[in-house]
Length: 306
Length: 78
Image (cartoon, rainbow over all chains, first blue to last red; front, side, top):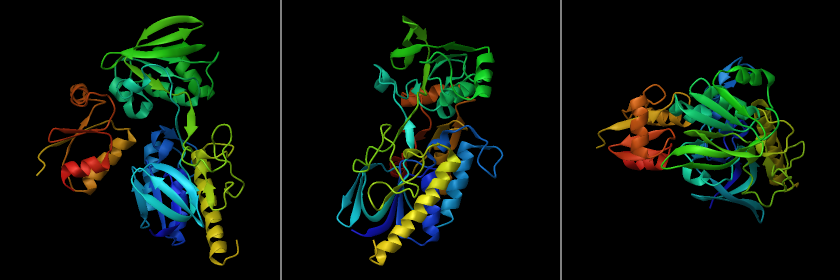
């Protein structure tokens, strides 16, 4: 098996930026990713990425991708990394399709939506239960829907859905909605919204498709007739495959200021790490930083000065 | 030879954009249905695929849910 200089896991802002840097250094590398763009591809409007005053998430991803494909990049899309481990002097990456050996690794696998963990969730996934309002929202035109969550991503989903759906219920665990004030006001003022604070989802029910959800509102159980349920209760890092790498309580990969993890040769960048803020522009910056650290590591390894 | 390719999408979903780009890159003709504005296409998509997620690709009656590159390639004989 050939040994790559570098394997980059993930192709969101961090992974793609790392790939651009690696390509410019002529490294022999491969990018392995489940998708392209990660959460950015699911964002509605991005208004804080320097150089673009307003750009939609999918469009920004397209620009990232175009930039990446300017170079001849070995990209393995639709591939999930199952395991990453030390293998003597290098690293072994096992995916659901193949195995790779690399001298160093950049983990930029991002985060994904957290699951509700209630009865009905596995059965009704894509049958009324959705995790991406911008993708699947339009299918629920004129229908009653529920958004689960009370933070920025829930507000984002609600702001998309109030324009499409007949009525939007927001099922919020806390006493009040959190998140951006302007967004909150916009949603609170919408005519077709009911905000249910101090509420939890107990179950998702239906026949072939979702028909209702059972909730507990202020201690009272009740049933809401909805055909769509959008789960926006937060994000979890995609770090399960990196069991040997040190992670914090939130399962974020712990890095130093050089994006180095506890294992020499494994770097990490972006939302999968414990970097203090999760922003597209920060993830991109971290991706470049991780790539530069990786070059340094490879150069030292080559000269035998570890 | 593949005869009919229908793609059910919404304008905003990133996977829908990828499916359409993929087909275009491979010079495959297809019919696109925007299920956000075409309710009968939305119903047809749900009926065909038994689910409500986009994109759905119908290749001569073979239904593929999501941008499953391998299955799409196989179905198209690429």
